[in-house]
Length: 438
Length: 52
Image (spheres, rainbow over the protein chains, first blue to last red):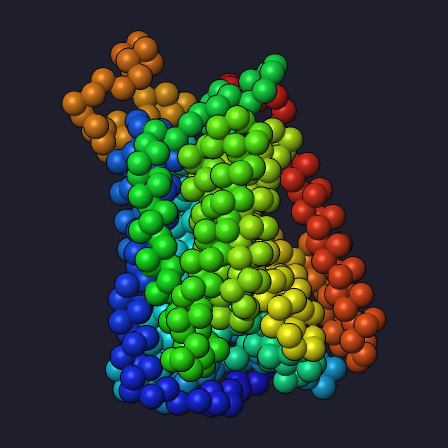
């Protein structure tokens, strides 16, 4: 393996682009806030404070671990844009597989503004990727376990893929090495953030197992509805603001999109979310007789996730089509996962983030209009499912031996708030009196 | 699932022309999907198990 210096990025950003990207990145955390609200609202009332506190704790842990370890693995070059890394030779091609950035963000202050913005983008991305599995473990995943999962995501799983995609890794080089379009494209983090978070959520759900009483011996699975539809739906609107900023910043940073192309990216983001919402609304209206609020929220979010991959690459009509597809698939797949596969995912993260992201990545490959682009996107998807899902699962399985993921039965009975925090989110209300005071 | 990924890498290295390369990449993804299916089946809870 030889340390390599990647080629410089083809475009140096103008001052206007730098200022705009910084402003966008300061708004982008609203996407994390929206997802945190949605995660909390879709859980039960007796675990609400623990759920929202967990989101904060996970963002904090992910940020610290990424600064200490992850940023080095993700790889960036303080002297110029791009990423440093280690590569091996296979079939005459260089395969850059892991970053070799300086420890603890050394010399970041001396790096060009473009490199610093790229690192800031990755900090936000790792926070979002770490928050996603937390929602799937709602009502039974312990706070310490959630933080441990975040540490693993931020310390190894996310940085590896971020390096492959954004810092000159082998996926980014698919265009140069194998003439596959422009290499793997993931401007808004659909793969690095959402699919990665979604497969992390699947691994967590497998290990932590379903909530007590979710799948009874006979009959259908028990419905355990979210406790606050207002949090969920308001979270969707908050997420939209963050997503618009996120997609625009990603387009400037990773696709070097000119400023004139950004309004179209924003419009595509809104069209994708709106199309997904309309589709989910229609599907749930037809299937259940009335629209389902939490599924509609999931549909909206799936549209946003899909737009992360392709908003900067498609026409408005194509963005709407992608959104409608994501919104149609979401409620049906949520049902399949729960009823047919016995997967208890309270936030729907596996469907929304993993499947929504995959749809967006494939759409980017189809609609980008470059020869080999679809193949490049499929190779990236293959790396996510074939390498990073097993890696995350085995790391989490190992972690579970040291930090038990699942709360004990008594804790699950009285609720995570009382068990882990000693007080509830809604102290003036008597919650689940039949169980808590028995 | 890793086997599917290595099939996919082999397709990149061994097939210079787009059509067979795309076909074998797709085959690699199918192998990954099979692995995912087996993993999902392996983790399916027996009914009532989560109530204990």
